[in-house]
Length: 398
Image (cartoon, rainbow, N blue to C red):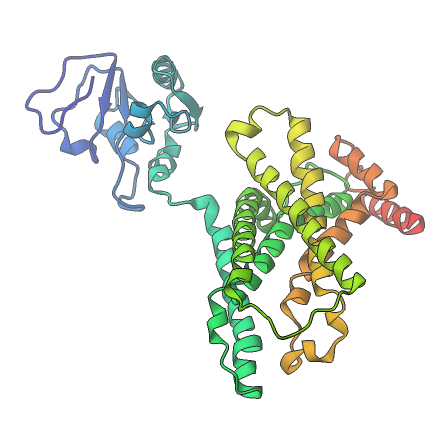
């Protein structure tokens, strides 16, 4: 039963009493005979109190077993039958937690065990989180967008005004945005697969898969899904801008057009790679949805996200190479001795593809697969011998 706020008399002894107040002492008299107390209260902000509400409630009623949980449950999810919002977290005494979990399961909820009551403060902070998994990817997207925006404004708009006395600031809205979105999309897509390649080389160097990755690499790998979805969003914006851009130009009726077979091949290849790459990109985004990815086996999901993912990165990188074509060799391309954006955006994906190419070589892939299947060098005597042996054999094979 739910114990109401500011009630005059405490409830009768029950097996389970639920407290939904922000702070337990704001309720009425606490039940002395209750066996299980469920605290589903939330604070207004993080760090509001030194100790968790459930821990404070446990001190008030030491004879009862306090369980923290159900505080992440949304009335919106209950009313609309949303499966995504029916996951609840529980922490507390094992026996009491088992009773609460049984009750939650009967209500159609999915229970996640967070351990003892010491994790109550972490559970209380869950409803206060604002896109915690999206923070670093959003920072990366914002930083890349801001950098290339300023870089292209200087190279295109300010350069044209200073050197040619020409005002082309109107291009910021469409043309400049159409340069920023593909650059950021390609870099962020490559950032999805670069940590996997780094992890592979790190496992080869260590000779084992049982050692924990560095914290920076671990955090990087955990946000790959968000990086990929943001990259897909920028690719979609690039496709929209590309469709709008021809309509914003004036019709040319004075300059004669000459057919060039090489240029025609280049243009058709450019569009073909763009269409195929974007199609696979959308496929990757669809399989990342829980409703779609949940229907796939692990081998199918791994094939789509890994094999097709690298194929998407290869097609997108090839699209950018064909777009740049021979502009790298022209002196006019380097305005104020700065490289074009198409050159800068190819650095990270090219490095990622080269690292992946090395990892798929039989002489490298075979020991890596053995390590990922559980094989490891003897520690610590044979570590240097094993590492040097693998490196020398790889170098000889290459």
